[in-house]
Image: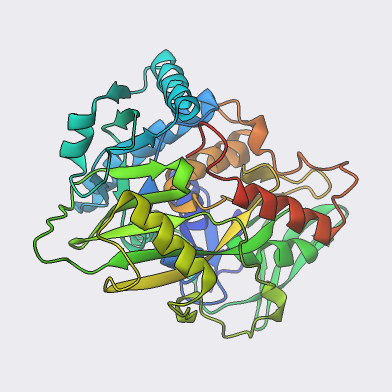
Length: 412
């Protein structure tokens, strides 16, 4: 087996595999390593919603290009990857309504398809939603959702066809650095060599960063969403709109005749990844229906969807998100180690952002710069902060950002 590559990627989730696809299509030899199955981390537990409009115009344009990539993938694979449902944002108070108006105005300035809509239109796009308390609505027709496994498999298939190598159940135990530059990685059974190593390990990325003695300002936080079973007499179409109700801290989309609803609660549960067993599987996390955060999720969901209550037949999924102190991902080179890149910290938006992150990372690695102004995603933007070496301070900042995720305007 070949042991020398142009790029080694640690982590086989959506962002790592998207980056592998883009690099492979540009002629780079790529090795992707994952300590378990590909997509068995955060990607496998993700809700898969896609919202393109961001407060940063460059990021919105990049996400729009990511959707073009998805269209090209669907044509290449002859498979449906993305379900376009459109998405609603709703407001029940005047200050929230003004946020929506500003949101729409910012989108229109860059040619994004979004409009304020009326109550009846909103009801037609999501009939099961209570809307009598709402005073403003906006709608983006090009948003929707992914089945994360289908998107991931698409990345892997195209990357493999372009020559990429994927090794699952291969844990990276050390990163070889000599003279301030990356030389490769060591696993339990082999060594692999490359001048570029990308840390795309999701919740485990801060442990990978520790191998290089570079700080990683992320926290790993639990997140819950419920999926209701189909309800007799209540028709929920797979093309009903997604919704974001920031005041109630919830998002929702249709799922197999039921409704998927998630929430960003005020007190997220933190996971210490180093304390978990080596064979830990995120899909095996079990949560009781009487858990406080699940109860809060059901209560929040019931405010917008009255058919949901504690007796509603449903499943609850738990995953682990990787949050940063400012709510933006860490994507790009690390200044202290030549050839080391981070691609992590997606704050619950990793699956959808992966469509464009591969473009960004390939630009940086192949050309040394991005076509977009993405300084707010710089991997080393927190260097020099007094708290950067204090894990407790980092975790507190990230927890606060999670708790306020839906209380800050114009963030998806």
